[in-house]
Image (cartoon, rainbow, N blue to C red; front, side, top):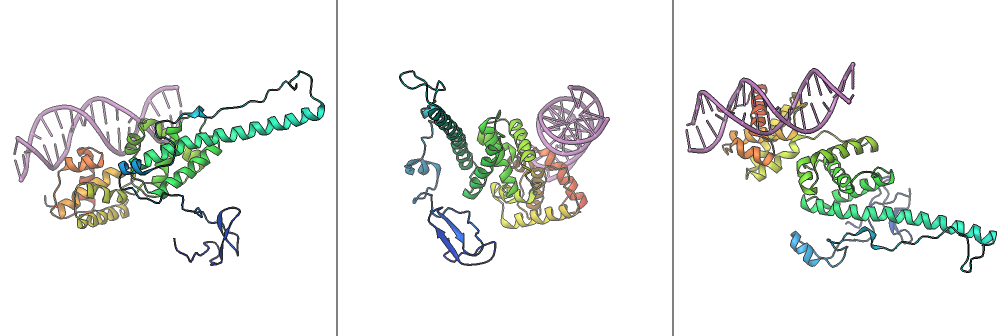
Length: 303
DNA sequence: AAGACGAAAGTGGTTGA
DNA sequence: TCAACAACTTTCGTCTT
């Protein structure tokens, strides 16, 4: 949060706070900043989920996400007043307009309710997977887009949320596998995958294919390996990418093999089983990738 | 005895007719 | 909609440390 803001559109530093809309606006080109003008976050910090629950004093109760909590009102269409006599044409027209707007505002709140449930779910999965705040914001934005396009109908909110999070993670290079998302959301992998593909199609998302390098730090730290090993593994992967060895291969398998080899080379040996465990693949896959990498890059692994 | 290796059969998902 | 297909898993026997 620096004081000297610069407009990303035109480079001007003449940024002003617009009280009406509550946003920061560039005076030269009218660019509106994304960030909320007010820090909506809590003034306290929580270091684990227990503290989070303990310290939070706002927000919806976690257990009680009942959709029908609000009362609903419907205006009838009899066009009679309380004594049963018919409305005059003027009143009738007025009532028509009232009904119209009543309906419209009700529809919009049902969307809000949908969004509220989804946001709750996003937070839940996000905290389970330790996702950064910005990613959750992006996920929420994408979900909103999906709702506006009417893509939720006939689908579980949870499934859409999981798919959205998976997509955002891939777009931003946060290494989370479909398996992890499935576990966090309690939904079968199959459903999430299907919904994910649907969203990618409908929303024209451009999702880059996962770079195995993203997984290296994750696996290495889970195995307690040094930074040197990480660097070596990344070097191996870069060479493999140059040689086009990775097409069609699962990114986790390749990353796991690279970490395994790097550990071997740096004398921090881990068994294939251990590596397979943290990577969520089998030993056999690691062996196959290992064989390919060793042969194609003729690596100096003691044999 | 544990880990590494590789062959063979099985599985779930994608693709193209 | 169905069959072919590639990647990956499971299982199991053998070899190495």
